Amino acid sequence: MNLIRLSIVVVLISGSLFIGCKKADDNLFSTKYQNMMRENALSQAAFDDVLKVAENILLNNGDAKMETMADSLDCYAIDTVVTGPNKKTYTATFTSNCTSYDGKVREGKMFFDLEGTNYNTTGAVLKITFENYSIDLNKIAGMMVVTNNGNGVFNVKVTDNSGVGYASLYINSISKSVQWRTYHNRLISAGNSDNIIINNEYQISAATATTFEGVTSDNKYYYANPSTPLQLNYGCTAVGALRYPVIGTLEYGMEGILRTVNYGDAIVCDKTVKMSFGEAYSFFDLY
Image 1: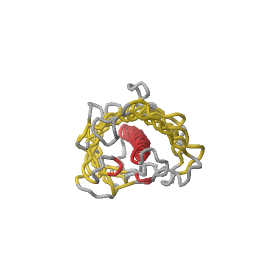
Image 2: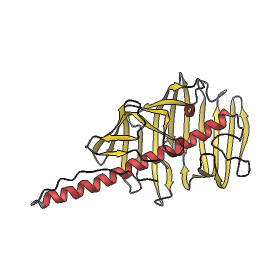
Image 3: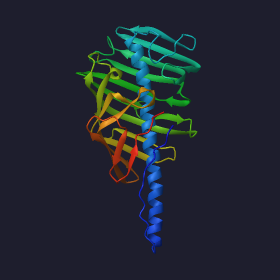
Image 4: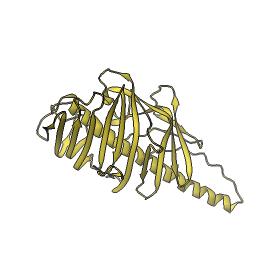
């Protein structure tokens, strides 16, 4: 994974020990903020990938040969069970080191409980849970619930299995776990007419007072809210075809300090954002 790299202009002022200490504190805080933003993005990317797999399965009515899966049936299998009227459970099982079309290595089980005629019909509810599931050795635990509210609007909720606490993501590169949860709306704004998120451009907007929140690997609580909707476009992708915002603003809060990330106001796929405290960085690859 590539870390966020910030280009910081340091103005040296001699003769003041206090100012020197203040700069050290600012640099330490800036590093903590970078880590927090990175871990929030990694958490969102991990669960977006889960939804990508789920939607591919549902689009293909449980057919195992699909875009995000492996080329053969040797390392994964999908079972479908009808549990009641308009209720189905899909189980996706990935054996050790199952490499997919998109280059990612998935392992473990995902369970998709669908209530409704089809996922892309109004009122459908999809619940996703896990059993020893990981993607590229990053282990995911918790629950994701996606509700189709109609007119291209989906409500997305990620928590622990109780529906209240935090989901968790073990980040292999740092050998630490982070906690994360979200409750937000996604509005399909352009693209196909199939009402499937992965096939279309969409906006992320707040559904509650706190849209994203979590606890970092160094045990710091944070939250993030879009002050204007985040537009994610089909053609603007990072590694692994995961989209990143090209329009909108996202406000982060940690340790009583607020920072705003501005993704711009026009569809430009340059992966560059500017922050409210004058720094700029190139949008990092999510995996």
